[in-house]
Amino acid sequence: MSADGLFEMAEPATDPTEGMSAQRKLTQKQATRLAQGLHPLSITNGHIRLHPDAAPAATRTAEGLRCRTCAHLNYQGPHGYAKCGFGDGVRISHGPATDVRLYWPACVDYEAADRG
Image (tube, rainbow, N blue to C red):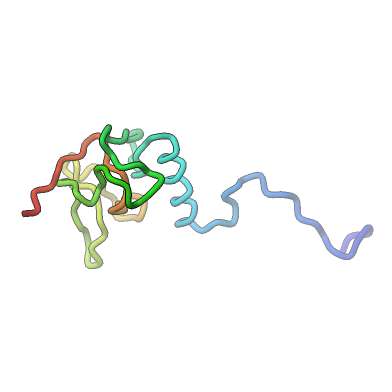
């Protein structure tokens, strides 16, 4: 207890992600990338640009290219996590940072899948 009050007041957090779970921080980082016109996928050697015909990031139902229809999309592991197999799998790790959301706008490396 402090001398001038009943309760100690904590200093305001300087890091806006302080106290967030790792998954929530990743979601925030992905949203920031989308707002910058970049693909949300985490890669170690830079950023991935969005395809010129990509669906708008603001809505999941708008017309346009999305990861769900890309030939590079594949599923990994026993639970079938969606991953980007572009470039012989250089964008794949065993963690959630490289999981692909099917509704994401397509990147510049998009190729239409032949699922027929």
